[in-house]
Length: 411
Ligand code: PMP
Image 1: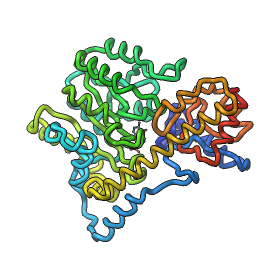
Image 2: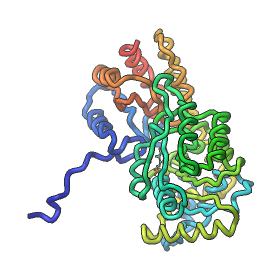
Image 3: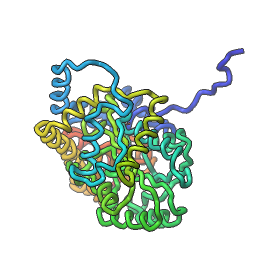
Image 4: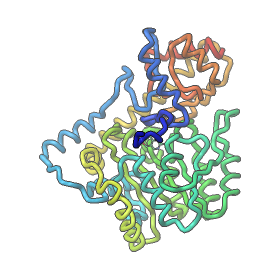
């Protein structure tokens, strides 16, 4: 007899951003297979973190500078409060809602354990305090962790239409139809920009329409903003959807991550906010967020939040950071262009415009599972069977090999 004899071995869990969590263990095999491959030209397009043009992880110089200041200030290691390093969440909220947004004094805002923690706290808050159905609707497909996070918070998770396989684009009509078909007052999770995994975003005009339909239906929008600045290179442009919904009067929930745009992945710097009716309501919400957080982990880690706070609160460092985010976004955009150009130059008859119209870290190529298999087998290019590539794995040195591989298999 063993105490844990009844514990079954679960399926493998994807453990980083881009990975598909338990719905697709295949990616773990990909990393292993990539490592074992001796082909000099091998390419790993499964990575979920930014890589520079040499294929190396990148620490932003503004982050190095902020970290240096944190250390030089000889700050102590005392606990932060329950809602974190005080100057961080307020500055993060300004970044999201805009410096002079009228909602800044009507929000309850707290530091969280990166974006994942923000979503989890948000799920818990909805579960306890949302008076409507305890159901959250997420796009098909979505970041695989969304479902698990909200289920663990005790919500029921339902899908809404988002991606159209045939057009390799947005199923806008399906999305609107699902918004309209849901019971009034439903909670909808939106990717604020750079939808993961498809790279397909609504246009500004489409966001306006989505906002209008949500108002009409009295739906509650929950924005997951994991890539602000990282998508287009412009933090304001990437906040368009969030700010449009706010302009239209929505009381949104918002998750922010600084994993991608500051490259703070392992530091776990994130923020969660809820827009209330007024300052008094925000205070009540804030008290409930504290009640949720305290028994979960007492208070969040301080180091990454101090770094982010230095950057957000120092105008010079902030400007430097914005340029560096743009540098990352531009590299990704350039790699998209290069890949498309090379495919066209090779004579591919397929329409590759989606490669450049999509945005953010990931691209849905539209390649079929058997095509992905062939590309991997014959050309040592590794990516998931759904045809998703992490654009940040492309460099000016390997893009020719990648284009050649896709062209040889797909034509
Ligand atoms: N949402 C989406 C859509 C993501 O892709 C990610 C991963 N970067 C996150 C949230 C949260 O990641 P993290 O917990 O590392 O901030």
